[in-house]
Amino acid sequence: MIQIENAIIRVNMNQTNAPKKTPSPRGLKQTKGVDTGSNPTSVFISMVLDMTWRLALVVIIPIVLGSYLDTHFKKNYTFVLLGLLLALVGAVSVIYQSYKGANKFSIMDIKGKK
Image (cartoon, rainbow, N blue to C red; front, side, top):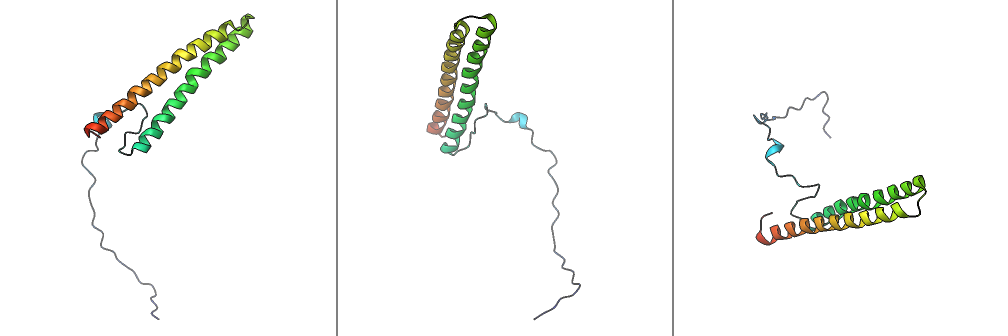
C-alpha cells in the first residue's frame, strides 16, 4: 500500500486558441421551426408538432372569438358559425402548408441533398 501525502500532480495541457472569428448564423438557411436533421423520424415528429400547435391556434381562436361575439351582441350562433367557417379555411391552409413542407423534405431525401 502506497501513501502519497501532499502530492502535486501536474498534467501537461496544451493550450489552444479560440477561433479568430465566430461563424455567423446569417449564412445558414433557417426553416420554420422544423428539424432538418438527417433522421426521418426526427423530421416527422418535428413537422407533426409544428402542425399541431398551428392547427390548435387556427381552430380555437376563431370559434372562441365567435362565441364571445354571439354573447356580446345576443345573436344565435351567427358568429360561432362564421368562426367555424374561418377555422375550416385556416385548417385547410395549415394542412396544405405542412403537406408542401413534407414534400420538400422527401424530395431532398430522394435527390440526396440533406
